[in-house]
Every structure is written in structure tokens, then in C-alpha cells.
Length: 67
Image (cartoon, one colour):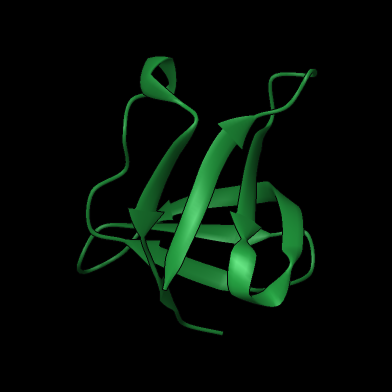
């Protein structure tokens, strides 16, 4: 699924999923087999094969929902 990554005013990474009209803060980042796994405040886990540098945000990237 396509998601948009951005930084909020507090400097926290935020994920926006347009198809679900969902915007949540990232509460945890871990390394997975195929890349980075971001855990959102609502409990979703999204896997990113390549996570962009924070200086290039906002940016739309491809993610895989794990949970």
C-alpha cells in the first residue's frame, strides 16, 4: 500500500494512509527481515523495504501491512 511519511510539529514521524483516511504517529521502529518495521499508535505494523532520510520528507512510499 502507498503511505505518506512526514514529520509533525513536534518532530515525530507520522504515517498517513490515504485509502483508509488514517493518520497515526510512529511509536516504535525495529529492523525486520526485509527492512524497517514501524509500529503505529493504533497498533498497526508496517514494513518498509527502504526508509527515506528524514530530510527528504514528506514523501510517498510503498509499505506492507504486517499486523
